[in-house]
View: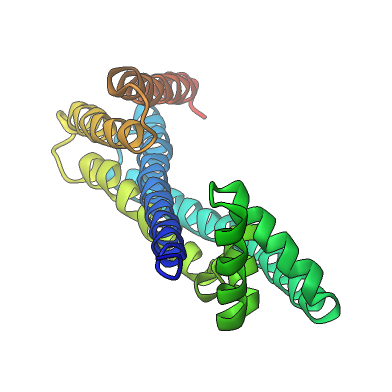
Length: 241
């Protein structure tokens, strides 16, 4: 009986970690798309306040899309690279400790498993079995909360951020350049607010936050950004800047 107890608990922890990772990626994608929507919408609406030139709007929108998506990708790459370096260093330190003091590390793993609710005897047996299979992986998962087989990948994170931002930015860009001049501003505003309603709702759901409040906050922030940039563009356009 004791032989079968540890693996299910360990398997559930691994499954929970995998689910948490997937949720984090999904949340990052939603927020990246939201950033793309708001920043590009603010940019093109501001330009629309100053000029009705489709070429100017397209140039500004594409420039904002590329600058924003590349900035997001670089920032995510640097951030995740630091995280991966930290995980790699922690694993290296743990490997060294296992080599220098295996008995102390076994006692530490036993105490950690006992802290999760196992009896001392079962925790000891589980620690011995996990150590015999793969000591480093056992300590990494139980002690450090790291899965050595699924370290964060900076390139994956960079591409995900780039694509999420680009997907969000395309909506206001297309909405401002495709309709006729008389309708493009309102088409853009309605499209952006509709998209922000969806991303705000999804972000709130993923964060287990009240959806109404999260959605309203996202929509209000986007509306304020467009109003401010449009006002600034109108003033600058009227001044001939």
